[in-house]
Amino acid sequence: MARDPDEIEREIEDARTALAGTLDELGSKANPQRFIESGKASARERLADPRVKYSLMAIGALIAFALLRRLFR
Image (cartoon, rainbow, N blue to C red):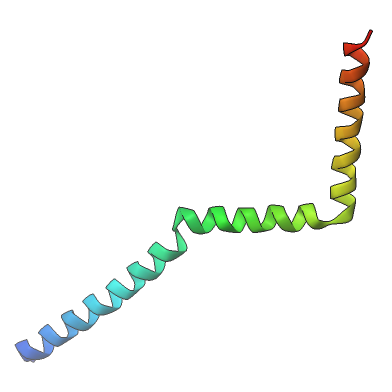
């Protein structure tokens, strides 16, 4: 049974529209800026944890003390 050419054209146009929407969605999901912002937010969240924040402060203080001690020896 032969199909109507107008019907085939409508199906092709519908498929194009659906494909364009899918490609736009994939483009927004794979945007590098989105990954950067997500990474920044994750880092800020981890640094807000008092255990991490105070541990980093203690390590920084130890390094500063070691450098000052070496400098004045």
